[in-house]
Length: 234
Image 1 (cartoon, rainbow, N blue to C red):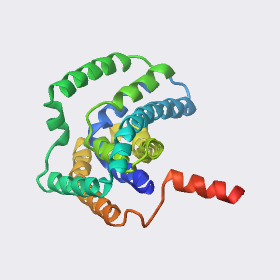
Image 2: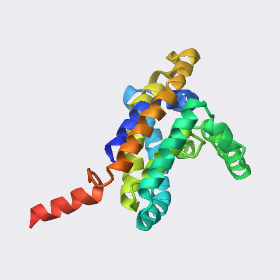
Image 3: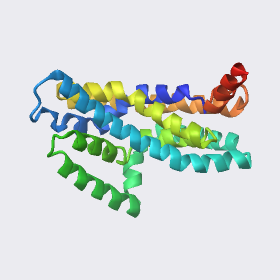
Image 4: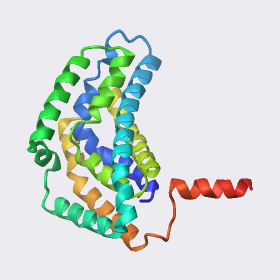
């Protein structure tokens, strides 16, 4: 999967974050004991770093699965299936998060994560901010699921990890803004942003289809550029 789409997915998809993860970002305890804007910035940055660590973990875990798909030669059909699913979800406004929570294992895990989050939000230490970010990354999120599937489609473990890291970086502008002044964004505005999400999903469905039918046309992945650099050295 083109690595640049990870940044785009995170950047555009962060409108979904404003509705889903916004309440957590707004509730961050950075105001407790804070004296300077620099300290506020650093703590919010650490929180976002925590989310990216979790995303990188997902990239590693599911990258192994993606490598299997690539080896079996079914990457193209995997992407086509993904694109069709995204279009169906967008057209019928399927709430992916709610559907996921109905799965017993995910439901119980989500409950435990929320309990740990509630405890962590009472502390204002750097360690707590990192922990909150890591836990936040495990909460059910259709956008993250989409990124994971796209990461699987890269066909390699390293590419998958890099894809999820870039995705996380793409979500940072919105999440940093929410951390600073998210309380200024009305619930109505965040709801409006979430309504734009289906359009975003269809755009990525088109990108996935383009990748499926031009799978060897644009070798924009980590391995390609690393090999290119090695050739330049010699």
